Length: 164
Image 1 (spheres, rainbow, N blue to C red):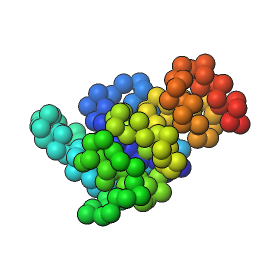
Image 2: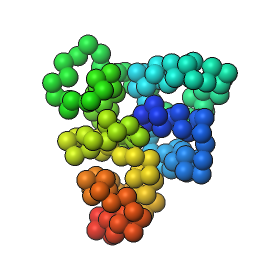
Image 3: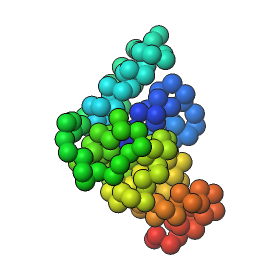
């Protein structure tokens, strides 16, 4: 599957590594194709310059080591077919995920997550949702609405059995 990552997920993976972010990276690198849009890369660099200026080398090292496809972000385009994102500056990110046929968009941004029921492709998931369905359902995409309402592991396992 083609998986697109949002800026906040990349920040977590680079600067706040945990067992969860390490597991996410492992699942992505070993089982999926990662796509990043140039808008997310630009936003990531601005965040690093503003919040972690001493860590710019860590960012560049991460980007060199992470296998991903860089895709163009639609700019100055008519976004009529794109659901309205509450934070308008994020619309190009969703447009890129849709335009480049991402199967899943992983984000921690509520402005995107509230659109999960309005966007069929890509599925918009949190890091936990993605990890859970990857581990328990054989990489079969979940029913997004079901997962948004029930992030408890017992429900995820139940959903995995239903999806098989």
